[in-house]
Length: 74
Image 1 (cartoon, one colour):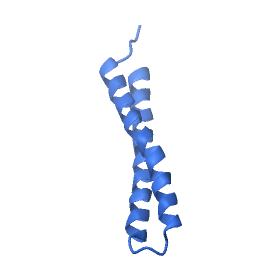
Image 2 (cartoon, rainbow, N blue to C red):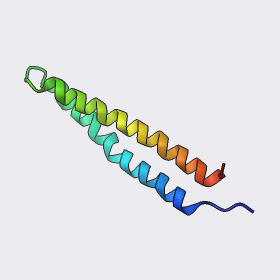
Image 3 (cartoon, rainbow, N blue to C red):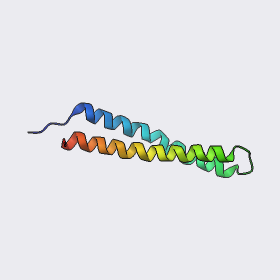
Image 4 (spheres, helix red, strand yellow):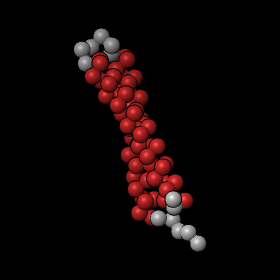
């Protein structure tokens, strides 16, 4: 009988926990950047928001992949 690898499962949950704040912060920063298009820091703030969203997506995929590895034990 196979058992779940608890260390790998915890690592996957940590990745997903790191993605959660970025999933809320990224769109908020992008929205703020689009509301202030006439300001000089528009472009750096927009890039920061896009990077936060991309980081969230990356951490979500990595977390789900790690969870699947822990549960189904490649």
